[in-house]
Amino acid sequence: MAENKQRREPRRRDEEREELDERVVDIKRVAKVIKGGRRFAFRTVVVVGDNKGQVGVGVGKARGVPDSIRKGSERARRNMTKVALSGSTIPHPITARYGGAVVMLKPAAPGTGVIAGGSVRAVLEAVGVRDILTKSQGSPNLLNVAMATMKALEQLRSPQEVAAIRGKDVNDVLPFWERKKASED
Image (tube, rainbow, N blue to C red):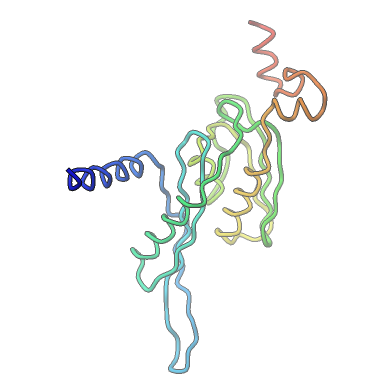
């Protein structure tokens, strides 16, 4: 009986992994200088999301690429955070900085698509955003850009939270296309 339970658990973990959207954003060769010369390894940036509002970024380092991807994926799964979304976009514009990278995110009307490049696109698609406008400034380092995007997403507040903070009705803080849709109904 105990053997059957042990057999079932790995299957559940495999099913969870299949649900998650995993993307390798960057693979870089890094070197550690030691007495005998240089020791090379690989640094991998991995983004994992469920396309329903949860996303995580992980960094893995190892002598081989597959090991570094596995480590990055495990760290990304551990670091997953919940993100406030408003339909297929984000609730309000936001700017975040991480290192030398600055990322600006702006909500967009349905049908716009993900207007983003590189690691910003990977993070936003993994979290489940389908309509957004973005701008990445400063450092082009893919790790810093991905982390700046994560920082911006973590700072987002739901329309209900923003309305409560401002002391307004929820309809007053919604984007114009949602207000228009609500007035037509």
